[in-house]
Length: 271
Length: 327
Ligand SMILES: Nc1ncnc2c1ncn2[C@@H]1O[C@H](COP(=O)(O)OP(=O)(O)O)[C@@H](O)[C@H]1O
Ligand SMILES: [Mg+2]
Image 1 (cartoon, protein in one colour):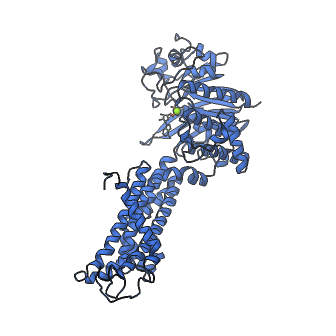
Image 2 (cartoon, each protein chain N blue to C red):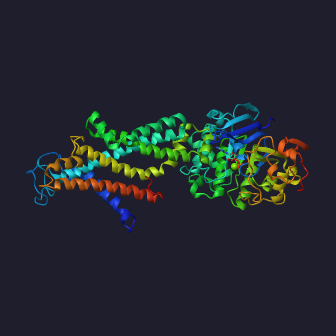
Image 3 (spheres, rainbow over the protein chains, first blue to last red):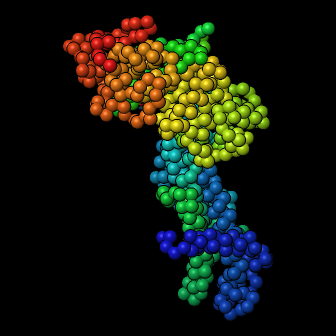
């Protein structure tokens, strides 16, 4: 999406705000456990005022599933992205700043990780570690950190040649302080643009894992709702379409927001 | 008193992609007393920055460095690349860079940049270091220093940034200040103010100042001593006035011809000699590097490199025909 009309920059933040509100207010908007069977199975949308979006084949409220699913998607997406960027920033800073063998080692490691498709690696990790929200976050971070590491490393290589870093060295600052106080902040700007993409990808991976039955079984996630509705796609298409739309909306919201933020900071999307 | 700086036979080579070595400086000797100013002058690529970086311990690890460096009477192996942090910090060297925009961390308040150095070197706590920073900012002529200390660099003009950089250098209580073309990026008015500030500090604190410039007029105006570099070597060295008024080496003569009258401060451009081709540091070491550009070159110049030899009361030149070129 180009920044055509003046309000196009607001679409992302507006959608995101909507999702965040849904996630925060889920217990008020839809009290109780969304996994409880509360009504006649397969109530069609817009036919029952108590269950405006209908129910699935087990009589679970679709509206409740969607607002509680927003919690899962956002929390897992943000946590996974934070872990991904954390690992990437740490590895990239150490590699770029130390150079030499440490750099070579870390870069070979990122290459090794990048030869395996992100989703397959996450899938393998969750099937080994077990399906829980924490493990999903861990699996996403482990499989997605290399691009962040490479981006940060490239920036660190640029920033560490700047005069103010030399000035800090002459001043006798400790190497760790130089790396994380002097060099890293200057290398973080492009990470802002990457952050939106990373959150979006994490939400997608979480949904896909849930779709394959590897999400947290105690949480109602959009991905598992899609999987659940798949068998009934002809008779009750809304069971697939509604959570599917939510996933698309969430990914769009975080990507647009990250992009807009990066623009505001005067950066292009570099990816 | 022992000289604050004794540099002997400094040779620095950088690896070339083809496996060879580029000798950026060759057998450079320098010495400086406290309270005095040495100007290092020469065109771009002559090796001035490399000399300073070697003294400050800032050469990249892959550089090959030989020679010896004595600071404030202490001699040591400080020139080895990757000399320890303690070695670098213990040098009590302050360095001021050419581009004031790049020498301050954009994400730190300028007071923090200065306080950082004060904390490391003087062992001060946070508040004491901040107070020291404000005092230093005042000293280098920053108006309203207590408030300015909380500003980020982008709020300051180029001249103010350079003043902050000088304050940061002073926070380490250096015996020696290395200034690499500190005024090149500034306009003429501010240039003169910054030079005046540096000279005042040299007088008041008795520090030694090595001032790199490619402007002989600036060198003549502020320095006690001038060393002229060409293709990595010092080709002429002597009292500032003698070098400016009676240059001996044909290269120094050409520099003097391009300079403004003694005492004036010229607005510097990047290339003082547009009419001369760039120096070639890859020339065979047996010849005088200036020979290809020298109007007085004779056969001997192309086969035997002239040593740097005293010609006249502390005034030395490396030229077989020293003093023959007309100023
Ligand atoms: N880190 C480096 N790696 C390779 N070559 C370098 C490096 N630093 C400087 N040089 C080369 O050394 C020579 C002298 O450079 P420099 O000391 O910067 O000269 P000046 O400061 O007089 O302009 C130049 O030919 C330059 O290209
Ligand atoms: Mg230079």
